[in-house]
Image (cartoon, rainbow, N blue to C red; front, side, top):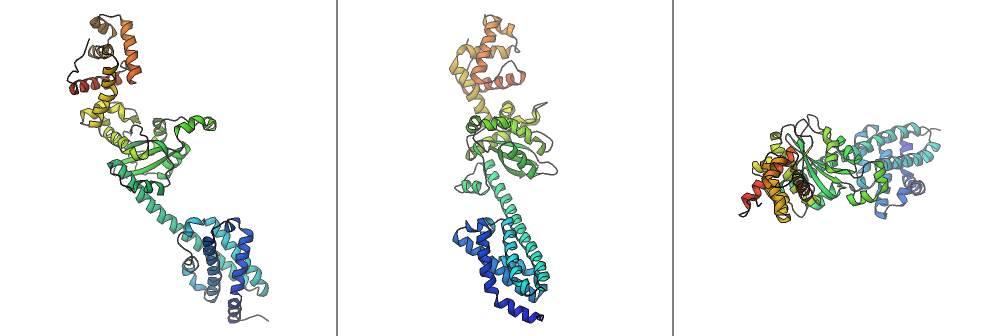
Length: 400
């Protein structure tokens, strides 16, 4: 004899505890991740399962209550459960609950099978909606937090909370960091930038400031580890310089100049690289046919002319002082070579030496400071350094 709906509801309420107990046993037997959970989280998952059974009985009584299924089932779980249990695991949990209820209920009352299928569909969509909303909220929060971190790096105004904010973003960078500044594209694809960076064994923090797009780049593995790991070398992702990484990220920027700041030792020191990159970006238009991307240090003359104190001190400390400390002959040779329009013969005549001697000394200059005076662009950098150095040095006149 078929039961009436009221009789079926009364029967379901009497076996509710039995269904909950059977569900917990089935979870423990079939889902390894459930057994590995700490007791507190296992209890929370059990509460969700019990709430699902109770909600099914209430839904069976009134199927129009689907709008509050998510709040009814997942409201009993603590908020942190969403962070520890994935959507896939939640769907596995729903499957177990549905199987237990079907095995017990539909045998005694086959008419409940269709109701169970409809309810399982509603609860699955409800679970997906809960996780989607949580992911959207986390995405918005992460975007605001990332913008705050990038702003702190650009301004150099750090506080004690910066390391924890960086950790909260899931920053995977280790060791050296460099800052890349360019224009914001009309349609910014943040996900594509992150995918490209991950493919290059790098991590990025992304900040948008109006028309300016700023990327803080760090390697996912320290450079020393990459050099020691043969598998990384074989994969072709090892030994990439920050300039090479910037070149791979270049399509994600808008048209215009793209400037990379110098490497710094850690993310906490990234403000120095950011200041150099921003200063270079501001004057990049003064370099005709500038490459994209370009190094901020290749714009040292323009930055110095624009009043950038960091550029001035860099030129003096990386060019003028090392040459001054190394050899008076190298300093005098470089002065003469640049003053004579980079002519070897004219320099040799002025110094009363053979042109090969001039070549040797210029090679030594390159070894000492890393820049080659025979190149037009690098000659401009070196001449700017000599001028600034002599202005800051009371005894800075060329010595011969």
